[in-house]
Image 1: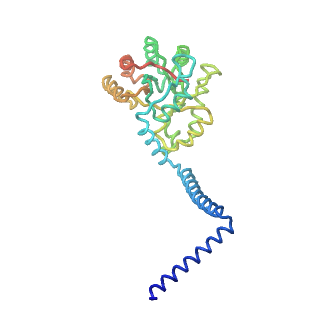
Image 2: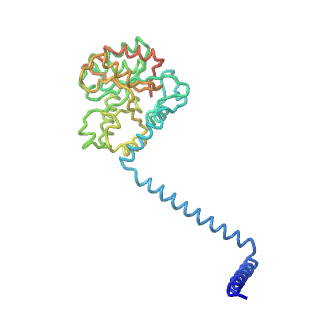
Image 3: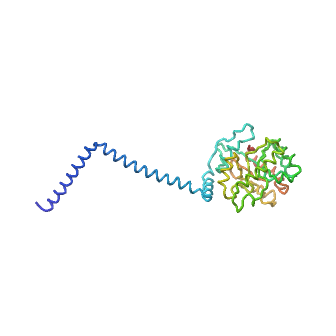
Length: 320
C-alpha cells in the first residue's frame, strides 16, 4: 500500500468518526428538533439585528428634525405631489364654504393642487385691509359676481380706518370669511433674526381677535390666520405648527398671486400675467392679493382676474 493510499484511508476514517459523533448528538438532543431549534435561533438573531437597525434608523430620524430637514421634506413633497390627485374636500353645509380643517391639510400643507375629477376651485384672498376706498370697491365687484372671498384683516388697518366697523360688518353679512392677519405686521417683533417668535405671533393674533370681537361681537371667531410675509418665509416653523395645532388654528399661505405684494404698481397687464403664470394648470388655487388703497391696479384688474378664472372653469369658494 502506497503512502497516498494510507493518507486517504486516514482522512476517510476521521470523516466517519465525525459523522458518527454528529449522529449521536442529534439523536440525544431530539433529532430534528435540534436542527429546528438551531434554525429558529439563527432566524431570531437575524430578525433582532434588523429590528435594532430599524430602531436606530427611526431614532436617528426623530433626532434629526432640524430646520434644514424640514425644508428638504417640503421640497420633496412639492416634487412628489405635482401630478398627484385629491378627492372631494367640501364638507361644509353652505355651498360656497369649505371646511378649513379638511382643505388646508389635504392641499396647501402637502402641496397637492390636483383633483381626480379636475374640478377647478379658486379661493380669492385679500390681505391688510380694511382700507378706506379699496375694500368697498372689492366688495362691490365680488357681489356683482356672486363670489365669496377670504379677507385677512389687520389690526392696525382697522384702528386707522374710521369706516372699519361698517366695512367689517358688510364683509360678514355678505358671507365673506374674515380671517386673522394679526395686529402689527411688524417683522422685527414677530420674527427677530428671521426666526418665528411663537409667543409674539400668538399675542399679535389674539390682539387682533379682541379688536374684531369688539366690532362683530363676542361670538366672532376665526380658525384661519395668515402670517405677515407668509409662513414659509421664516425659520422656526415647527414650534409654531405645534402651537397652532394645539389652539385649533390653521395658517393659510397661497399658491397663486397677481404680484401686488411688493408695494409697486406694475400695471394691470403685468398683474394679469403674474396670475396666469402662477395659476398654471392647478385645479385648486389660493390667490394672494391685497386690500389697500395703494393697490389700485388690483382693484382695477379684479374683474379681469375673475373673468380669466371663470374662462378656465374655476368656481369660487371660501373657507371657515
